[in-house]
Image (cartoon, rainbow, N blue to C red; front, top):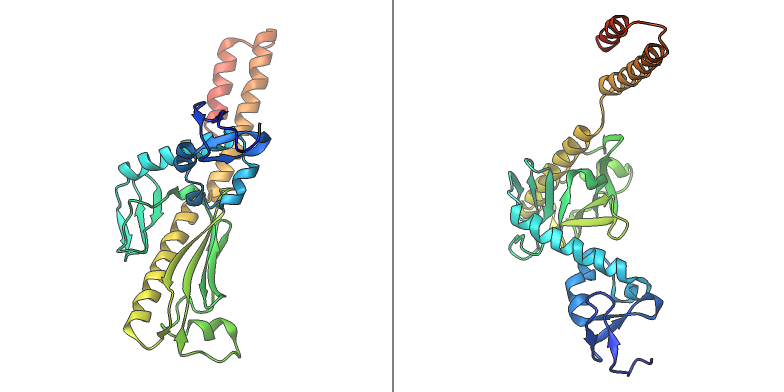
Length: 263
């Protein structure tokens, strides 16, 4: 049936829809209500992307939005950085506050484990970066406020005005792999208090993100212990097979098992 046929059914809710509908993949349709509930824009998807989405994709998007509403309701911030970011360390979740008065009611809640890496950009240039598997790097990490560009760009002349300061965070999310925290979006003098406050807030966020990532990375001792545990389990399995074959007694098996687990 063509687009102007009124007798179409939403592939998600299976209700009949009128002309206010959206075409998706496999020549199927989604009603305006389900489209709104999926909130693709919040997932970082533009309107054109819907043509490539299946009914299952739309259902997953709706499920994601419902989960986010529950996460927002349960979100209890233990740390807030200005009107920019909040962290719930008890539940290992975080969110970016809306730019209007720092509200969270329309924010997306992310897990600590979603964070892959991050970098602070000033006027389009990376000045500090870090994340899983890497240490926090950047010549101005411990530098004075206002000197952050010069510390990493060497011979480049230090500008007296900053037009953009934002934190780019890469996430483990195929639909929305990158989010930004905007600290400065208009011209500010680096010698001014507003710039200093924004820079300090960005620096605080970087420190927290670095701490989160470092806590997620297994320590050398943990890896060593995991290897020992695996090796012990393999050895115990071997002795269990000998026990089943009658090659050793139950007492000998128990004694060997205790010995291996104490290593």
